[in-house]
Length: 226
Image (cartoon, rainbow, N blue to C red):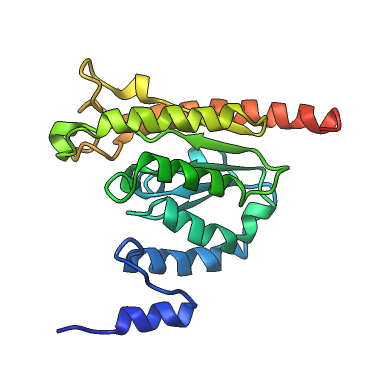
């Protein structure tokens, strides 16, 4: 039996459904995020991404952090919801980790275009850290041929970040792949995509280091009047 419950719920929130890309889970999580967003302290670290981000213990990176990860999300979903987060405007930095779910929906060029649009939604005085799209275990995930696209996508994202002093790029791929360039079974939960405890420990350690570098650089730019 078909039902319009989800559509009516989405309409009540003020959203328009255009495809299956924006899922019921997306709207459920976004409604929760909007309530939480009203209580986020200034100078928090804001994480935005998909299920890989949603499964990250962000307070292990920085105690004053908020996780706006949504499973199955894409760059399109991120673009739709970022303007709704007041906490971005008062954050100390924004971490973006999204893109794996885009690969089956759009070209790398379209994804890169969306990355550029995401940057424009963050105030210019706030640094942004893009965490690379992680390679997959092509055998365990069934996503054959994905890693070559992911490598090229990350190269393009890195190029974007090199062109601005407030943009940073973190790629932990070299720490979590095996000799074949696949996400090692040692670091995923068995599905070939999502990090396990060991994988997240590596990601967290690298994120902590980058956040510290960003904080020092941002302070130096402010002191120099930049």
